[in-house]
Length: 386
Image: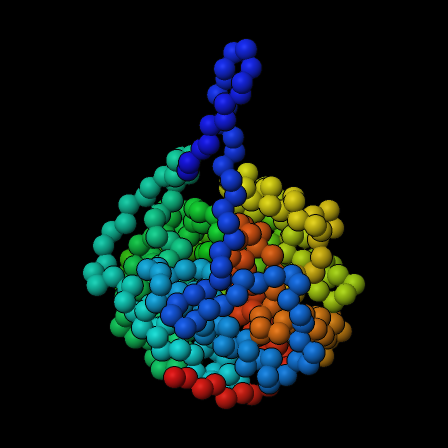
């Protein structure tokens, strides 16, 4: 990072390094060829009417974002293509088939040969298995595609899962070693939860598992998820999703306590706020100064307002827990989501990570569509692909 040296003309000439100038805002959130997706902003107008037209805009936003990413970047990520392929296939009945260009990109990133992965450490000494983020999201996306599109686990998905387990930590968890969009894949519990979701999504994978090495690794993951001490309320409410994927890992008492906790945090307007679920420094093992300043500097820092991601996820968690869609809590949240969709089709949310590209808006839009679908609130539309 470049620093500008300022010369102070005083009796003794001193040199002082001034803070680097903030990076300029990018021109677009996503851009590739004819694709130009504007940056999300809080002042973008809300839709006048929620319905088929606004949902088509949301689908286009998700398609354009992921298409742009695979054409311009060289990674599978947890903020764009990851959420696209993990959530979009389940919405085929309402929104049509997802883009095959995205799944083809995921397949390209599956290692041809599965090799042993050795533990590394960050500069601060935090030990982790490299590539865990990518391996989990790649495997989850491929498993969800197989579940909802092909109906059987493909060879490349099976290979991806085996590579994922090579990146499992010695304690059985999948460790979140780098800062990413809060709260999306910030804690070890959530990344490990997504790994468990992967193997329950892959058609027939669990039932057909015979490899003794993988059986042992799976058992370690189960033990860790069952007994891990929650880092914050975020981890506590995520036990509801763990119970949905593998009920044997969550007791009835723990499940009921998590549902009660989630309900207690609903705002009067019907929404939820992500920031209500953790103290700032408990989101990650090491919250950077940049993130701390961003979050404490938000206009609603002292009293966080409802946000699209947590509101949508709360609905998903309740529906996965068997709460009926007509429940008052869910109905209030659905109304909030419908009112908050923007004319671009997306659901805006300020990033709690960097505040430049605001990728959490993309994640929130994926989750909002999922929540609405689980409440039978998504209109069936026709998606045209070039």
